[in-house]
Structure formats: C-alpha cells, structure tokens
Length: 448
Image (cartoon, rainbow, N blue to C red; front, side, top):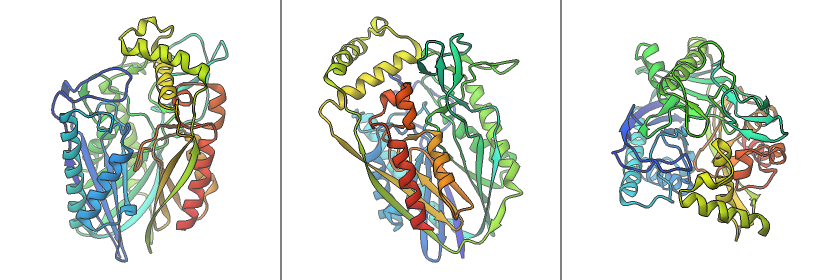
C-alpha cells in the first residue's frame, strides 16, 4: 500500500545575513516573499523515502547537506540514502555554505537544520493512503539557452539583451514540466513537479523564493487550496530566463541589472504562472499506475580536477587582487564576462595545489515506474537528455540539480572547447558530463 505525507516549514531569514550567488557582496535588506522547506514522505511495503526542497542557492553546501540528512535520519528513522534534498537555487536567499562563518550565518544554518528535520517528522506523521499518477506538461516561452556564439567567434554566457554581436544560442532548452500527483484518500493531494530554469530572476538584496516559490503558491491557489505542491529544479546549468531578443511586451516588468542580465520580481511571478500552467495541463489527466515498491540508492564516481597551469595562475592572481580590492573597473571586461574571469581566477587559485580528483555522488529514488536522479550541482540540459535517452524501463525520469550536495557546474564536453562562464569556472575537467550520464544510467538500472 502506497502512503504519502506532506509538511512545510518557514525558513525566512532575519535581516543582515550575507547572500550568495553573485561575485559581489549582498546582505538581506528585506523580504519580498517567504523561503520554505517542503517535504514529501513516501512509504510502500514498510520502506520510506523523503523528498525535500529547500529555498536556497545551494552554493558550497555539500557537507551541510550531509549534516541535514544525518539530523533527519536520527529524528525519523528514515535511512540516510533514502533522504533526497534539492535546493531550488534561488539567488535571493542567504548563504549557508561552509565558507560563510559569521555567527549569524552559523545560527541560521542550525535553525534550517531544525526546521528541515521538523518538516520531515511532520510529513511522516501525515502519511495517508495514496495512488500515484504522472505526466509531462509544457511551460513555453520562459526558458532560454544562456550561452551564445558571438560574431568574433567567442562564446559568452548572458551577453546582454539586444547585443548586436550575438550570432546564435548554443544548446537546446527543456520546457517540459514533469508532474507527479499523489491522490490521497483522506487528505489533500500532493503535487511534485520539476522544471529547469535558473531562479536568478529577482536580483537585489531582498529575500525571495523566485519562480519556484511563486509556482508553489499559484498552483495551490489554482487548485482551490486542495493540494500541496513541492517544486524541484531540473538540469538548468545552461538554461535561464533571459530572452536576449524580446519582442512586444516580452520585456515588461524587467530591467537590465549590473551584470547585463535582465531581471524583475514580477517576471518571476510570470514564470510561476506559466509553470503552473504546465502542471495544470496534466494534473487531472495524469496516468495512474501501481507502485509495487520504492527504492533508493547512490553512486559515487571519481572526476579529474580542472587544475591550472603556472602560466594561467599569474593572470588569475592579478584578477583576484583587483577584485578583492574593489577595482573591477581595472579588469578589462564588463557584465557577465567580468563575472566569468573573476570566477575562473577563483577556480584556478583554489585548485593550484590540487586535488587531482574529486568524488561526486549521484542520488536516485525509484517510486514504481517513476525515478528521480539527483545531481550535486548544476548539470547542462545535455545530461538530462543523455540520461533520459539511455535509461529504459521507466515511465518518466526526473533529473534534478543541486541534490544532496553542491559541486558547481557540469558542462558538456564541447562547452570546454567553446568557453563561457560555466566551463571556465567548473572545478572538473572536460568529460564530467559524459561520466555523469554513464553513472546515472548505471544507477537507475540498478534500481529497476
């Protein structure tokens, strides 16, 4: 018998905490909408799994994810491997990684630990007899490839709206909304949905859950408050919200920010409405099926490190010194290219003494004919496509980013030859995406 439960806790921070997500200082100055932890508990034949979303950028928190999972395991009895936590990647949430050691940040981290554990305990207590259905809707016109070939032959990430030097985007978007519905016998239904898009739509220094938060709230209101909604982000490493060639009213409620990226709070709400439309397309028409078992597993792989040469380090140190001194205007780049070279310099300096390899752990949950595959960082859509095409025996596979850890970007092999922010800042050597695809396929086959 399949049972599911749901709980939600508020993790909106106090003012003053540092915000991560850009290469510039930001601190919480206000609150636009709440940050939340959402948890779905699933039980079948005495086996339990927990699927959790956290409104956080998720930067540098691999070890913190481990701490969260250990606390939840202790409080609920659900095994560590069966706990699946995905950060939504909102860029307007406090930093909670190990690199931020202020007392207020440490206190906020500990508070999140408790609130996440609380949500898990309450979700388990809410378990009710259920049946599961699944489907795929679409959310057109809100996702765009963010890497472009330029007239000079270079490749740039987010080159700016209406930049005359843009030739063409490099890559393909995924505008599908994956929908899993748990219809419960004696309680509100639960919707688990995934969509791939960078939640960097709002900008500024006021807290917001960005489009994932809007999607949760709008979906629940649209369905007469008879459902709970949990959103996980998909393979969004090379996908964001920026339409570089807007027409008509496409640029309504938006502005060009400091890094040449167009943003706007109302645009985040618009994306939430469109993604909710994708959920609504399938909510009443999901394909119901039997869930005879749930399983969870993980797989750790070894990836070569993207270490710099001695020649590269000389320039990296120059850029780092200028950036830390607040002299970005002396670095010969602007907009997203400035962010790119600063991030690249940081990567080189951090890896100057190694390590030569990193260990990367994939997480997976099988719920009958549906599977979730979690990647601890930001995968390109090519990874999503590769895993889905190579994996047989599942009705649907939901690939999610920043799951149970964060280790940066996972670009496709060709992106390393082309350039751009993601490959130049990645701590992994070329080939990481292809290794993830192979390992993800093997992990899902083990669970099938």
